[in-house]
Image (tube, rainbow, N blue to C red; front, side, top):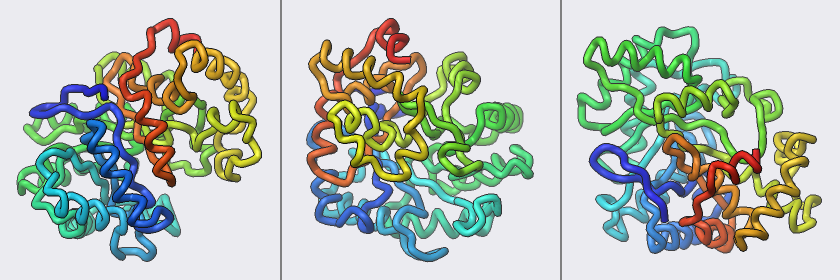
Length: 317
């Protein structure tokens, strides 16, 4: 397992994506995946207050499963827990929930469900471009001041807004955003193809900023719903409708033969290669790996130590 330094600790460059735990992914499967991830050196868990939440304000089955596992295995001090709050209203993604009341409600429920006194990283799950970044940073800093959160992150924020927020934080002795979470994989994607205009996907403008400032990124949908693995195996028909809509484009189809050739040359699976593509970037990058089957997480972790050269990354691009 590769790691990247992060303040007082280090983060495994593969994070376990826990989105559907306790819902689409049964608890038994989730607990088995957590055991495997921990045994193979993984220490970063990615969840959110909204993951597994059936109704607005209801419980997060994901956080509940993680809380159960952390408590029963006495592993809280060995794991880095990242969760998110202030997600917009599901029925209207452009209706923001970034306000102090919802923020405090979300973090308290997350802590209760995770059975923890604090979380290591807490993300504003979306931005609200109509609000000043100063107001949002001031609000988030309250979580750090109260000891509920160690570090603040921005999920689906543009680098322009992150930079504005951190300039205010530096000038006013507030807590800065220290990590970002956006959609990024070997496959190209846009908010339009994803079908969510509140999403932020990696592009060349964003990438240049992250590389310039050596800013950490956690990349979700890091394997593009299994796009390359399934196409290379000749199982393209098994791609979900969402995967087809988001990733099945001419640009991505052109990458398939290069992915196949390099995976064969390195004697790794396409899944492992897709993870290494992210974990070998210039700026600290963490691939969030989620899977519905135990075998899939094992396959992904099989290439946890793989690093690609700059020329190999350029070839895949």
